[in-house]
Length: 248
Image (cartoon, rainbow, N blue to C red):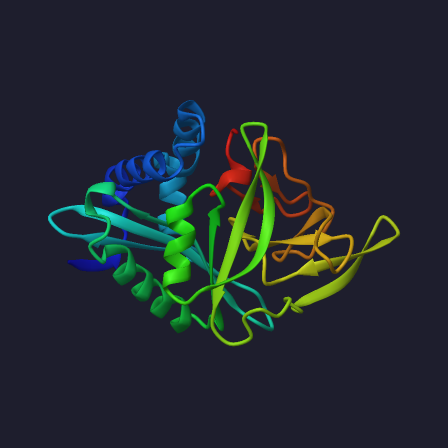
């Protein structure tokens, strides 16, 4: 088996693996919503932007064809976190060590880009996914509510590396409409021109109020109902990559 960087020539294979993986692991999500998510996350235009950019790391495992892939990125400033957003393995190739080898290589690449810790995220209903991170010495450190098809689900957060289990302190206080908010740089997502980081009302991180654009420093940005986020100042755009960002 070979693990390599994905290219645009892999687009159809990435969609195929993602579809089979999601249908197997997220059968508690309505099939029509899964299909809409796949079109949003893995359509030709979305994949072209992802693979042509410098932010996301997309690795494929190949054995007579693409059988798995991971999608991840390094976030943070004073403390960098490598977040594994997706690790898809075709159901026909599970329980053979493919996911373990791909995770190991993904960690190596993220650490090579400066990640101090590695983070994996998975919806609570995906029991096998949660067990996978636990079996690979990741600790369950946090939970996040996400809305999928009008229903609230819990996204489990797992981490490995130095300082795991401590609340992230990589934040800055900023002013928004006369109120102090807390921008957390160890969380967020990639945009077309720079990262977006969440701004919370308190350090408990239980009340998201805006998104900070690292490209220009603007903070008065909100995500639309489709999960699209565009900076009001510089036009930096974040495209859907996970549940909170699909047409769900």
